[in-house]
Image (cartoon, rainbow, N blue to C red; front, side):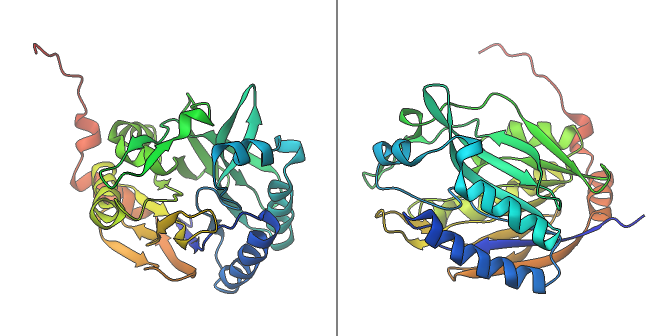
Amino acid sequence: MNRNLSIACLQYSSTENEKYTLKIIKNLIDKAVDAEAELITLPECATSLQKNSTLTKKMAKTESENFSLQTLREIAKLYSIFILIGSLPIKAHNKLVNRSFLVGPEGNILYKYDKIHLFDVELPNGDIYKESDTYLAGNRAVIAKIKKNKIKIGLTICYDLRFPNLYQDLAFNGAEIIVVPSAFSNFTGPIHWHTLLKARAIETGAFIVAPAQTGYHECGRISYGHSLIVSPWGEVLKDAKKEVGIIHTNIKLDQVRKVRKSLPSLNSKKNYSTNF
């Protein structure tokens, strides 16, 4: 049984105009297809970043109306590939959800995941983020199953990275790959990004695949870049640094079984009683 999967991460800077960003994405997908990637992953806020929540809400569409979603579904079908759309702002109820989509080779939406942990922080440099003003939090962890259910992929988004219990639960329930599409702050990135991603890989014995936004955006944000693919042993296999482009590798999923057998920490997971 073939337990390999060819994966690519796209790294770029989303603009305010989704159609312009989609042109950038299409060029990078062409490169990933040339590299024979089977699963192509895009970062959080995959096709646009707006200046403020008012504009984000104004520009957001429902799934059926979303131009980016329909375009990327067509591309997946054209090339017969899996595409992980890191996230799109989708209208739901009276707010939006920050939603990932896993699209199959026939252009169908296979799985969806709404970001559970919203980025409500005030950083030491004065930057303030309040995602809960714009988005509803998701309440359900998701494991995607692809290639006749033989490969299991845990879905997370950016700030989820700081909540290790989610990752351990995904791994405990069979996830061999966990994706972390992100638009990570350039302030916290240099200190936290590599460390957290390597830690999540080591704790779970899973491959961590983290496509990321990079550089300066029209809206004024700066993203850290450094899309990473990390092995279950915590080794950085690929690092996109700061450049626009792709990283690509062929991962061998048998490594997950070997690492978890060597360090069976997931099997030793306990619920602790406390007396604080």
